[in-house]
Length: 407
Ligand code: GLA
Image 1 (cartoon, rainbow, N blue to C red):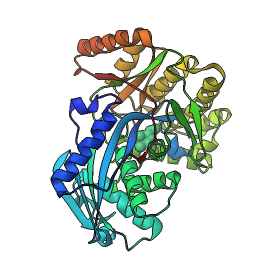
Image 2: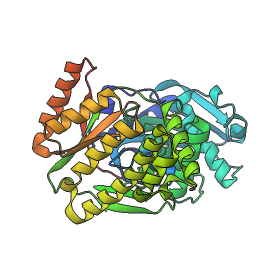
Image 3: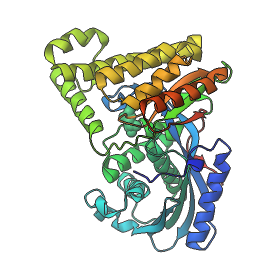
């Protein structure tokens, strides 16, 4: 897990992008003593709906948020990749030619945050077979909240992949760069995640979500139109940190694989609502409920896309609520803080609310009429205090652009 940025950084608004770029550039100059050749950035993401469906070859509907990771890059002439971040005063460096000796088996020798950018360099080497590239210095600054289910990891992967792709003239397209980011996450970091976060970080567009088929990687841009509908997307960060390299995430993945194998399909994507009675007969209760979450969640993603296109964003609230109930009761990845956030938001008038991301901590999102944002904020704060939970951090997010070069 990348160490936590300061609260000021983490909750800054869209204007933070310029500050993030400046802070990466300043760190670069302070640490390396010369000006960078350019800066790149990539966003975190919120997932509107479609949770744990990505590694089941299913459907997801994430959007990029305005919180971003910025990287300043300069070339070196010795083939070394050196990284530093505002999270850690110590630079970490490895010769490009030695990345294969470290990843994946000796990754524990690298400080955790540095496995993300160095892992991307390694994954690019694996993907392209490149052996002779310029060395690089990379300085990172991020305002994506860490451990909040907003994919700070895909932001650092996307920024690194874009910067190295351009600098090394690799000519890889954004989908391939997302796959590179996932390879880094799975093998260099060791988190058995799907492709959703990296695709959102690469492909995000203003005011839009990405409707992704995780089997074909076909990605369609879906207009969200929150502002025109007078809606805001509120994030309620519980402050409970999660990590996907250990624990429940991998167990859920294993249950899904077991369910698919007993049902005789390549992935749970191939199981429909009509197949659930048969699944109930063949599977133990826990595996059945894991499967039911995935099958119904895939359908909810399709229903949400249709509702957005035909009736607009105010019509998706019930689907968000149903998604949360399925994660709470069938997939069992929610926690009391997330349930409290969702219930408080709904009681205060949110149209819909659900936990977002991998679960076991992190944040909930709530779709709220602009005039009710303060009521939702107050209700969540009050409910957390009444339950004896640490105060949540609450902020709005705006669907934003994916990875790109900034300067
Ligand atoms: C994490 C993973 C994603 C996805 C979500 C759950 O964010 O990185 O690949 O599986 O959890 O939807």
